[in-house]
Amino acid sequence: MSASAQPSEGTQRAARLALESGQIVQEIGHDHDCDEDLRQGVVDIIGSDMVDIDFDEVVEAVLLWFREDDGDLTDALVDAIISLADQGVVWLLTPKPGRDGHVEPEDITEAAQTAGLRQTSTISAGTNWQGTRLVAPKAKR
Image (tube, rainbow, N blue to C red; front, side):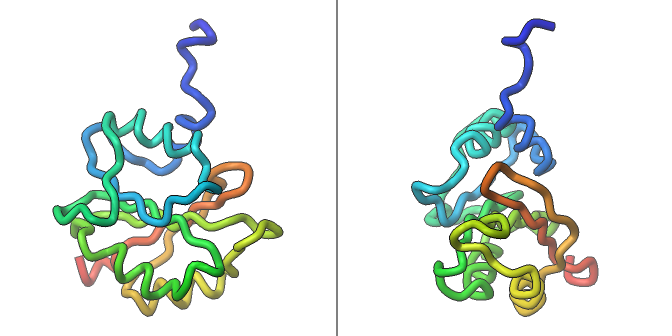
């Protein structure tokens, strides 16, 4: 296989999000500091652009970029699940420890529980970002 046939680093990292071609993915909280390689990797995998906060149909996944000073995390998570499909997933993307805007793990757990979500895993989503996978508890699905 030639080097050009290898998926980009961003696409390899985006593959950890377990998204599939054809899924509708909503992106919330995008700003200049977001990982553009990861974003492009998601677009490459799903085969279309991500939709924004104004999209009012059902989505299979939400990428929520969130920094400590972005406001109330519980409110952000409640807003993120408004259009989420029953079996959908929220990927909460926060700066890694030691980076500006880092969100403490206990704050993520508390906000997720209050919003009616359950944390299932955390991954490295880039040099500066980690991803926390949040889903609705099975009893609520």
